[in-house]
Length: 217
Image (cartoon, rainbow, N blue to C red):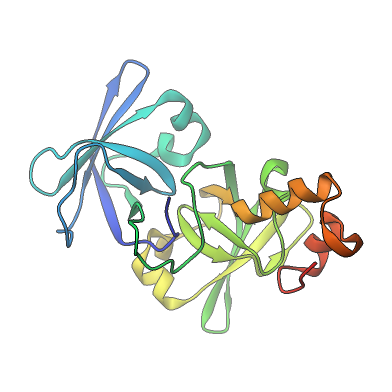
């Protein structure tokens, strides 16, 4: 489990072709605590298992073909960069929202524009993601915990503060970029319960989606 608060940026040193997928070698800056073989690390929001610590400052992951096909990890190239977050430990602060690291689908950046001191990014959302979005609700984009600022026809918009631009790979975000999307698991549960008619006071999922996460059933 993760929080969507990016801790480091990794750089792709090498990508190996392997049967059934690829082996990804990432170069990172020193971390505050040592790594353990087999621990889970979110790479652009994708939960991967640490296969090898390699030489100093290098993390190695095996990535299956299905993951390469479903996420933007398949488009990585040497010297590219990725967002990194280590899994939660008991007692850690939950600074963002609960993120499983199981990407639902990829979206595409449609527009990037200034919004005051922030950056507004519009991202297309496949139906499998869009149906679980709520204005002012949470979404993980390339592993970053963000708030859905606008829910549009078949897309959504988020606003990025300077800290996000500085501490993640999204400081270089461009139109056409493929983005890993994971809808908020709480919204998924609420939608499922709505479909079963379990929400109180006659609330429907459509009303919850329309009126936003600030309104309570």
